[in-house]
Image (tube, rainbow over all chains, first blue to last red; front, top):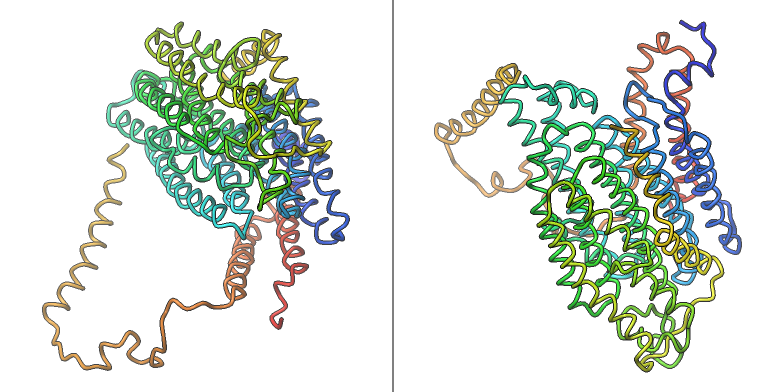
Length: 496
Length: 119
């Protein structure tokens, strides 16, 4: 029993599969503890410590890029798919940490808990993408969600932030209950919670009708839980209020990492394991996709607060993701991966600009965040580079070439057409046309209007580096999409 | 397969039925002679003072949560100790990792002065 060497034993138990998110969780704990002994003047080191943890984990993912391992009795799996999503989450977290370094200090929330919770959330997201067992997936989801509940209420003194956290927490707990009920029904129907067992018991032609009914009920409940995380209509009620009230950098993190994690889990459960139910799920997803896109885009037009506008825009983008998930198949799912990568750059960039802009001298609330859309009038005159970056992100979000957003939508809609969902693709394209209006309004205000309220942009070097990375990523994915598309296809191929 | 859960359904119905029946029967059959003392929320307790929704120091809440966490830690140790030999070195390491994670939390609480009752 005790004979074999320890290293081999750990390898056989699949500890390699746990290395990336374990490193993130360890650095979260290191940040949390370091904060206790740091003097207030040394707190500036916190974001860099968090960034070091992110880079360390990214290095481990790169090192394990070609490995495959299943760990902990078939609970988690390391393959190209989980490696891809781990990289997406780490990229998003790294950029958010860079943006936070100036934002958190200025808003007076530069504390170890902030960065520790960010890293804990990321480890949860990574666990969600690499889980191949329902309870482990739920564990990852809860780690991510609980971190986000706290982070969205991190401005403890502001009622809006407390409201954001309370709404997110109550509705999130409700959604988790649905999800857990779905897991319980799956367990009842198949006698196991591993994805492999799901595939086996629902994939065979001989599976009896009563199981089919149970499986449909379970998938429905699971779908509700995931749609909540994705922010899809009609489970979107929390999105605008939470996105508006949460710290801007946390809003950016939520919209990118939490959405990508839900998409990853969706593909693993419904795409790879429950493909026998695909006809039924696609029928539901079709409706969800149409309502989500339409509501998101139409309501975004009426917004006057930029964070609320971006919140509705993120609902609309969840709709485009649902189009790809409706299309299913390897083409549909690989377009999800490409979309998620493009979405990281453009959305983080847009929220990044918002976090760097604040009201200038003269007003009563100088130094407060400039969150009204009208504050962006004439930004190009005073802060040319910030306005140019924002313009790139807006162009990309509305899906105009040569940016990442164009190819992301192109792959999604062409996957939908190939899957025979021509109607859905047409509705999607019409929706993108609607979205051009409210994205371009920002560009119009920045370049064509006179300044109404003096605003000033942050000179945080870390923030600028993050924005430059986002601009670069947005343009790179728009000019040379094929190698990234191939990466997405390979990642999907590894789980089918 | 779904049929295998039938005994559980019967059991749930029996339990719920019994509980409802007892409450219902004691309501129907019992004699009722209410007095002021009998109708008070805690008949044998201290006479209530003021509103239940009053503010209380957050310390009580934090201590309760901390107690819960470490109580569950202790509960986890029992099954582990039972098959401790079977799990061998890997099991020992896994438990060490678990304890280390909780130790981090403990250090955090300590430095945040959660255990200082006098303030």
